[in-house]
Amino acid sequence: MVDIYLHYEGSLHCSAKHGPSSVELATDAPRDNQGKGESFSPTDLVATALGTCMLTTMGIAARRKGWNIDGIDLHVKKEMTKQPPRRIERLTAHFSVPAAVAGALDAESRSELEHIAVTCPVALSLHEVVALDVSFDW
Image (cartoon, rainbow, N blue to C red; front, side, top):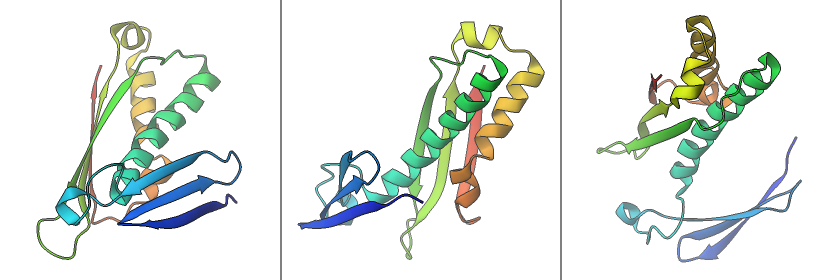
């Protein structure tokens, strides 16, 4: 169990403090929903959670298998619905794998990492109405 402490600052800004580490982050409503877009929005954090969860679980598997996946980049694009109710409609995740990493992994290892990414805890926690498109540039 992890405690997260949140505080409404006003003007659609919130702060959050991670209990175990005391690391803080801030959120703001996006420009298209009455905010100034001065920080991550709550739904941006969902996209961020997905991407970091994918990379982290891949990293855990890679460490266990002795694979070096350092340098993999991931771009997550978040798309909101255009009609109410406002929600995340689609998350697109595109992995760019450095040639040195790709060259050191056979097809089976690559497939295993792809499976780990799409079955990470955050991906499995998303509601099925959120489309998830994942691609790898090996």
